[in-house]
Length: 176
Image 1 (tube, one colour):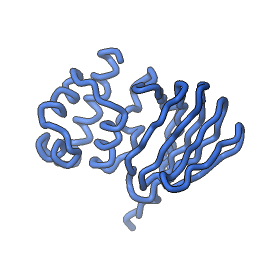
Image 2 (cartoon, rainbow, N blue to C red; image 1 turned 180 degrees about the vertical axis):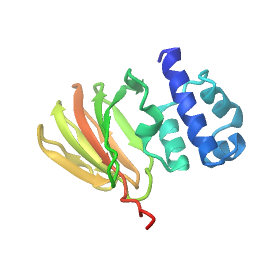
Image 3 (cartoon, rainbow, N blue to C red; image 1 turned 30 degrees about the vertical axis):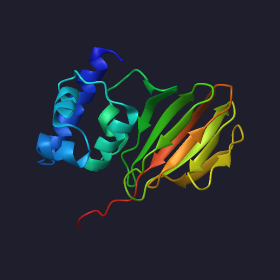
């Protein structure tokens, strides 16, 4: 990824961390990262994986999209590319992503924030997706919704696969 992508991501993480009153040490410990690694990420010098960004989002209790909102290029690693398309501002919050999987990719995802679901629609290729214990064969153009607050997985065969993913976070209680 380009330096500007890392700088933007690092700024977003630092702003959210300080807004929540978390020290660098506390967030690093909660996200199971070395403090030096988190410091480099916040300074725009790190090279975080998508899973690391997800862990930070979970610990900050914010949608993944809040961390990558100003990142214009796709984030990618190990055959997976992800790009934020749009974020809703209603309650519940939703994020929409485009994802691409290189041939023979298996993407294990850690649980997201409690109450989160993913709805995916396959655009091209073949894909198995869903909760680890209930992977579903996806049909092009058909939507599949599953719990994303548990471990889940994406697997494809020897062809590329692309999809649209809508992540819906749990409805937040609004103070009266």
